[in-house]
Length: 189
Image (cartoon, rainbow, N blue to C red; front, side, top):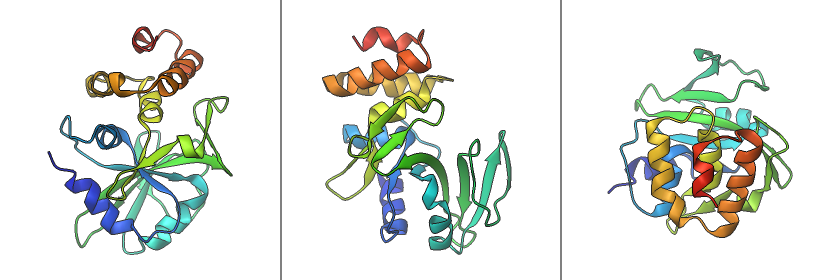
């Protein structure tokens, strides 16, 4: 199985001097060390405060912000919540990238849907041996509990037995706050 898309992102933004992390299903697969399903896009997470730096770094890209599911041109304004998603495209190479803005302050990450759910930044991500930073699976899974699709269930089933006790405990406690009746809770005991 290939992580070609992830390596392509690494090559494209390796010199971006702010934190960035592969997100979504690809992050689950990087954690597992193998591709477990088809992925139709690739997402990265960055700190909200770094959005304009990324736009400047990818200056030859076109960016759109997502507002209530609709794409509109992102000029140079600073994007505040509830806007949290940006789609970028390089017209020359046709590369595309979805960027997810995260609430990160100093050394703490806050879940944008409920800021009482937090974790230390060093528990937020890992880096592969090849140098690809990615979100820890418990962070990715927390985002998937609100509108869980079949591919989200597949991601959970693939990774749940590889989570350590600390990861399972954090995810369980976070789901209890955010979506207390979610079916994944029974597998996180």
